[in-house]
Image (tube, rainbow, N blue to C red; front, top):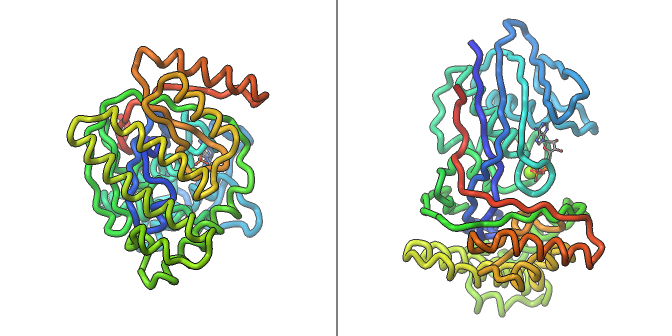
Length: 356
Ligand code: ADP
Ligand code: MG
């Protein structure tokens, strides 16, 4: 029996660096997907290939990471390992991967890959796993096998998202709500090289955890702005202020969307960017220039999306303004002598599913 499954990349509408602070995020799935075709081999051996890496076939019998040789195949091995750690048996298969999710642009091609593999293997193994448990299993592959300390947002969006909706996720309780979202989001891939990203991410996490400890709360989710003012260290104060204010912006965004006031979320997006730039300090010039140019060209709001230090900007725009905003960002990049950006409109799309 041959099984095919696909899972999307995502953008985060708002709620950045809140996931590991037990807060709120509001991602939606992109119309780009990673597809995995799994064919049982009948042997004690897995074989894995990807169009993205035409280097050949990787074979293994057990999903052990080769120390010190990080490879894209580890995302696949990690999912098999994660399922086995949960006590599931899956027959060895030949896995072929194809994808139109941009890789390494902060659009979560890694979660798309994990979630597509996971969805295919659950079907192949006839496993009875509640859908709401799948994001955690995929995240465990990335955290504990690949060794990337990401939060739960990317995998949740890739598995659970619905077309026409953003996904409100409470990263503490893992409760979700599908929020109808019908607006034009222009995604601008800045093509900025990811600089410093791993070390800075770990440092931001550590600072947030230290701030929560000083405030005697389990996580910054539990702090308010008056708590933040009590923090002794000025850098820690700014980091915490971002997280606390960002959680509030997510909830305000959801309230505005529920009230049908979609354009009014624009200023919240822009405030989010300003906070990420000045307080959390995870932007780079390419992100700031793209946001400024989009706003100048008439976007209702714009912000970086993803972890920062490169990656993408999203802008909320009128459909008729897409071309003008795109050209304005391109011109601003040319003036700044940046690599030309790539912009596209992204409609909120469906989460992981089997393919016929
Ligand atoms: P992002 O998730 O933002 O795209 P990451 O650095 O987290 O960036 O993940 C990118 C990595 O995921 C790639 O370097 C590769 O190892 C793996 N990957 C993603 N998509 C594919 C694919 N289609 N085929 C093989 N590996 C992939
Ligand atoms: Mg990733």
